[in-house]
Image (cartoon, rainbow, N blue to C red; front, side):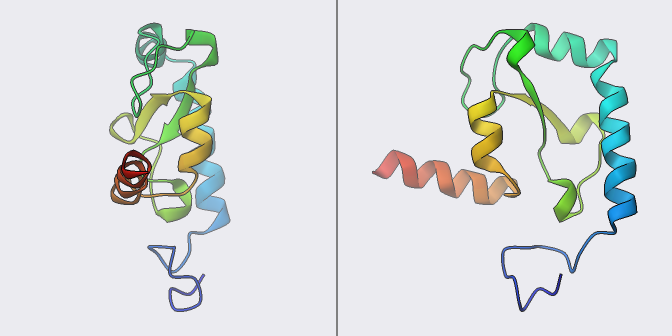
Length: 104
């Protein structure tokens, strides 16, 4: 995607093959002891809400579509609500969104 036609995107586009590869890495990490320990706490990275571990979703802090990767440093356990609302936002965009909600 070109930045001037879609200002919401940080990069000019990410190759679909790279996204598929990163999604495969994320699926493998979901099976790891590391991820099982992360979700065992049952807490959303963004809102802090307690959520049953089986309902925790994996969020890419920097989304794949914005150039993020499936690394431990870029993955966070989240509740479905936050993950759905965040979509392809970068962390700074998410913070602004949350601040706007609090102001309302």
